Length: 117
Image 1 (cartoon, rainbow, N blue to C red):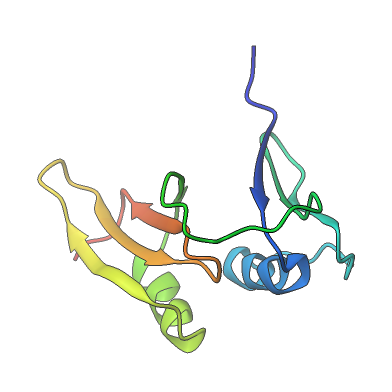
Image 2 (cartoon, rainbow, N blue to C red):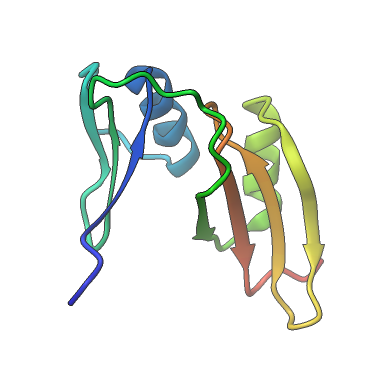
């Protein structure tokens, strides 16, 4: 069995999808207000409005992305004016991690195994 998809439920598909397109530097050529696929390879990342009102207060999910250049990604996040939870920091096991909130308040982690910070 493989994990086929991670879906983010939201009240505003276009806003969330546009954020993730900028974050991941991808384009899906869609402005669909109900459903957009952001990543379609391996495990998919989709943004979806299932018609129910979301309170955006759930703090029960996080996403983690592995990046090659943490400083580049950090500067991109600063330019996007995201709310940073934790700036990039080296962990005892050698990875450099950071965390921030997406537009709906989900916690997002970036990690790099190659940065020398």
